[in-house]
Amino acid sequence: MYERLCRARVLFREAEGELRLRGRLGPTALAGLRQAADLNPGDPDTHYLLGRVLETDGQTTEALGQYRRALAGSPPFPKQKNLIEEAVRRLGGQTP
Image (tube, rainbow, N blue to C red; front, side, top):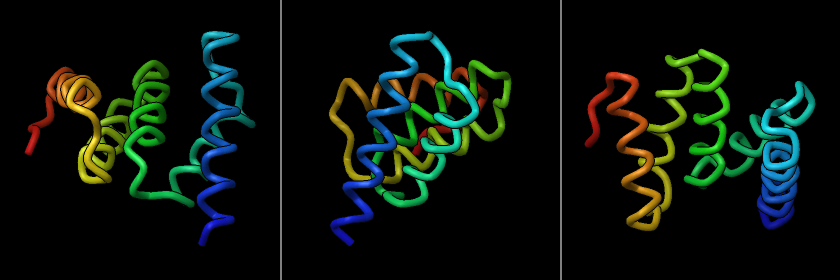
């Protein structure tokens, strides 16, 4: 279990770093971010970042699903929760 969580965090940080450096994710980093979400499904950070990337790519249905998973995961910080709820509303979804 611990190894899964560590691997998920490494994949998340790699994707986050590439996004900050290049402004987008390549296919390998995107696959890694998806894997991180699967390895640690309760991590709102991973689902939020994946939702942002998917929304930017025009994959709004899948982005909305990731934003909802972010809200359903571990309680996010208030500022993060507001950002996620705003993204859900922007895509036409309802927040809990």
